Image (tube, rainbow, N blue to C red):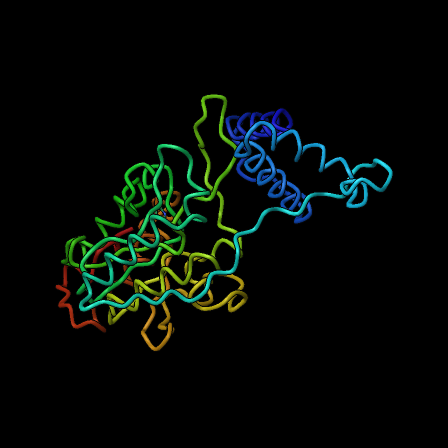
Length: 305
Ligand code: URA
């Protein structure tokens, strides 16, 4: 299976190198790939004797596994999904104490740790616990899982510049993600994961209570969802089909005003002033609602063609 996945990755890299931007994959194939990936990961996490035992179990029906039936190939393995997460309640005398407890809880959560490769980190939000504005992204990427901090890679640097354009500093706001780990994909021959994939609904459901706990502790006046994954997770799956339906509109999450906008990585892919202006208009709305003064110059950013 590893060989097949490596061949597939190589082929996708080759197509990308040849300028192919999209490939059509049926939802069945996505499910099969995801379950292959999880099986591979789980198999490589098992100690040797357990691996052999698990491999033989996979070749047997339930009957034969208990020693009573004929040997035959098993149906496709279901992926090992994260367990449902109960609500996270963090008590404490003040915000800092509650946040410290939450950080210990998240960094030591066995499910979060299970998804993080050796040398990489589980990631929790950062910023001011008194922030009026909280930005919510999707999931850590390669740089974030190394540093253990959200939005420190290229998209993060752009987010920092967007925050500065609002007349704020990164330390004035709180920046979190729905996910606390980087969703895994097969690694290359050098052991490095190059791509990123969107989190599965189960992964999102597992991590969301941790984000809710951060919102509860920081108690920001305004939330900003960056991109479709964050917006779906906060507004509810299926509330919109295309991000354009909700972006630039005030919504609500648990009683807090929520502005939905594009993810900064969208700007990294579309460097036009038009795309920049769309995000900027959403952020101007946040500034206006928060009473953050915007100069004429700020109001005019990215208007020139
Ligand atoms: N993209 C995100 O959504 N979050 C990060 O932390 C980095 C990139």
